[in-house]
Image 1 (cartoon, rainbow, N blue to C red):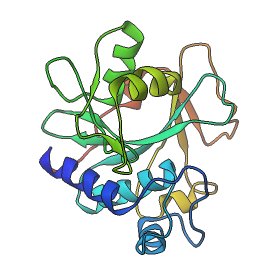
Image 2: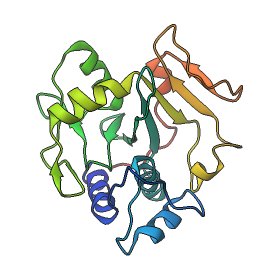
Image 3: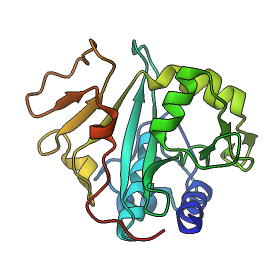
Image 4: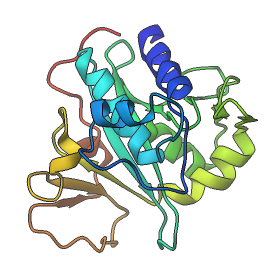
Length: 213
């Protein structure tokens, strides 16, 4: 877990979040994004940050996914985080580079995205880490981040079915999406290459190989 947290904080501190502007052109990958942001003149939106962090984890042999967290009705806002697999804990952990954030239960145990979603639904306590912040300027609090903002953005989840360098650039042609949705709901995505499921166990199945974190 130390490695997962250190990589998260490193990317969070190196590239600021900018949700008001689009990401750099020239390739949706960590190298292009980091190069464009290295002088500090610009940042990335939440998807860009999650893309950079995702490829950093993958380069270290740590399974990682980009997770788009969607509200029931999309108006003008959603949020993108990472799910990073801890072989030690045997689950996909909630990792958010926009806020340098992970989530724990009342005993301090790290939680998966699946567990956070279930706990919010069931009224069980969740806590964001004390270090969580936005751009090292504003503290990220449990109340604002989890109970106000993310609670509405966990109605359904989107992920890719495969991950690698520059995957985000190929998503329109080569990438299949998988959607985790409540029973009876269906996203607006009608591409026959995509999958819609309501089985948490299927969506969050463990990767075939995972490096010890």
